[in-house]
Length: 413
Image (cartoon, rainbow, N blue to C red; front, side, top):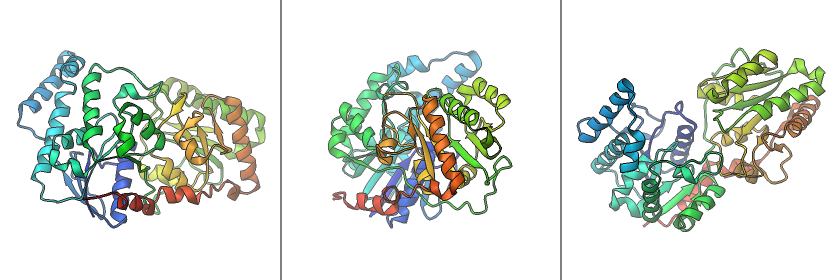
């Protein structure tokens, strides 16, 4: 089968979404499909074993000129027209020019795919918008929806109303109607989006984030990491809605109740946390058992650490429900060690780990978090192998073979 992947970015350092997209692309190739990637990274990035084409940006058009003029006004004269313009047109001039650039490149392609897969990241669905304009591809189109869209369909506390919400709503109604297939990284997300766009319940399937192969054998441990310790790692961005306060307070309570553990335990928080800078600076001063790096850490280092710590943390927002399958979930499963899950009761990650999973707590339940950390620590003291996750079912769910079976089950014309 020939698969054309149209994707925003294949730079794994720019976002968790790009990491997930690249893992999916690698596993499609690993499954034996002939894969061609059209990406809008605006860099000449190549993926091992996969043919990649960097879509060039259209730089001589009214849209390009208007987008740059808008930037100049914003930067030099502090005139922000974005909200007003998006209320009129639905999207920015940059978005329109980017989508047009992608569509133009696709029209010139001589590749004859059996399946066209659109992938995106963040709140941008430029590949979807481009393919929506190309009716000849609709009967081969699989629209992958990585997060709720538009943003007013996010669950609390993430949701807010954009000035362009009506146009974005109409855009996604068309996506749900025109794409022959739709795919989601989580079952809860498919059901959620299907409640707003019913056709997704008909065309949809779950393709989880993938557990791809990564070569980190030559990656060295950073100076702040001591493998002999009981290390708890949270790796990833801490958005405003994802406060680490409950985790840190739970860790501190554990230390208060287990003074002898101080010399051999460490909590590592790695990733951008600009919304929590002041709070984290206070914790850095007063708790030497916590190491905090507020910034981006290269992927190879993070992955290497995830595979060698005692416990990996998945931390989600305080909410009634979490629809998201974190991009790092496959990395945590591959690490085959305990996961400290801090998430709502209704959570895709909790659904996969199982309702009886022992190391789950609400994100702000300090006493519960401290209790779980103590339990994990005592098991580690007895024998580090006591923390092995041993979830072959989830390893299979995130594997190449599962992905291959899902794609092969499609009714391709």
